Image (tube, rainbow, N blue to C red):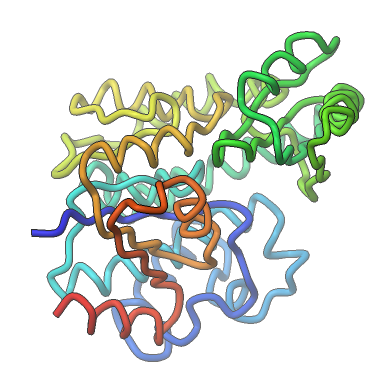
Length: 310
């Protein structure tokens, strides 16, 4: 039997119109968006299907919006009897992965990402931040640049072997970007409203930990590879603690995908909007590694995947 991993996207994968075609086809998908509106007070259907993009991209809106689309596609696959052997999600997407593994309910997933977005937005207003993607340097070289730069700057995401996102205060991020460019790397400033996964949003961590305590966590029905450790965890209390740490810790996506290949995953399915994660998987896995990669991000993609696995 082929071993299947569901991968769930996070911020950066959003598009206006995401999820509309499945919303119009499946009543139970409409129920997920209705529940999301009840939990968050946000008209997620209007936001996802009509935008505008500027409003959709605000982190307070984006986090529940992307999550609702992730959960909508997941619900279709689940009803078709297709379950992952193992799951992972990129930053925000890790909450959808926990839901896929039965650790948290759909309603609690929407509740958590809503509060997470509110708290991250609050801290971003207090502390101006910036992020940049550095392409062409290995993680050790980026860490050395970060360590030798004054001010708040750190690694936010290790997305692929030589694709790393840094985060922090604007000037230190700029300094590291210039130093990386001097080493022939490509430095791309990101359009974000805060320094995600940095100490600048640490003021949200204690409060978010309290919110996590208010939600029931169950043992996972299948492994979830966590961003913080690039490893799986069985104990619900430990999973809850990892999700609190995840807010300000680096996303170890490169190591997570390597872990999936070590677990002999041969079918990678990105469940949710965009193609960011499948693009990263293609960069990370060896060319001779036997695998199939699918995007379940719209009705044609869903139908193509269902046809392939039936």
